[in-house]
Length: 327
Image (cartoon, rainbow, N blue to C red; front, side, top):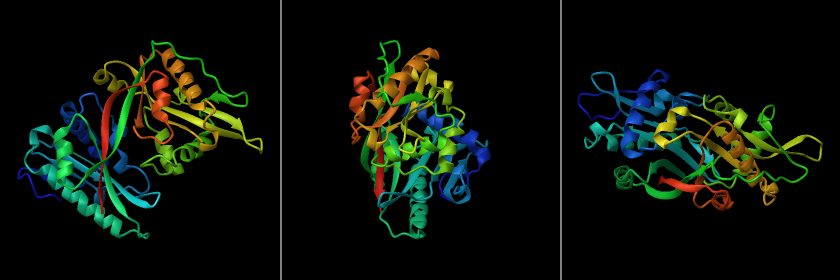
């Protein structure tokens, strides 16, 4: 465990610490990323799933009152194409910064990442990734000082639903419906559509269930475009998976639905499916009384996603970057 902060108690975090971690992260976001508010499902990743090892992959620092003032986690290595990737997250309370705690967390994560990568059965190049908002220059400077380099930029885009929304137009052999009773078909469509997406790895049935079990998942505001495959079975050709978290609305300036996933199978692109799904979704969001649609997209997406969104009236509102340290 990091040996800094003489008044702090360091230990592995547990599921019972999630409320403390959430309070810490949102306190830090008020300074680093004021428009971002997280909910419990956003921070419980290290404690869920069959491969979760919180005793080894998390650390938390508590002050004498029992409040969390620092937290870090690393994820088990994930194969992304020909690389092995360890994702990290870490945060220090604004009142405890400048005491070496952030550097200590990065050093702990570095040692843990190297250990996990060394224990892999496959000998692949490894790297560690983390995210930093454009609005947190101190965080970005700390990452760069510790060997991280900015690798990718992501745009958080918004669309006012009071503006005109085009009518969905899909090919005659495709219909749009909710993903109810099509969970596995939707997972397979997601894996296909994101196979060329930077930083993405295929979802397992377990990880897909975890997405569906989130409290903010809205199956009624999520949609799939469906066609019949040659065998006569339904094939999901595209998907929009949506989340709604009222806890996040105040910081964002109004109610919104967040398009968590949007993709079209590679063999079905160029047929207007993405535009139709987005138009259908936005009409549903508006009918549900929501003010905006929001999404996150790779600024350098090879599928041309940014242009699709801009053509539908989405505009970039915030930016954050993925920082990478290679081993």
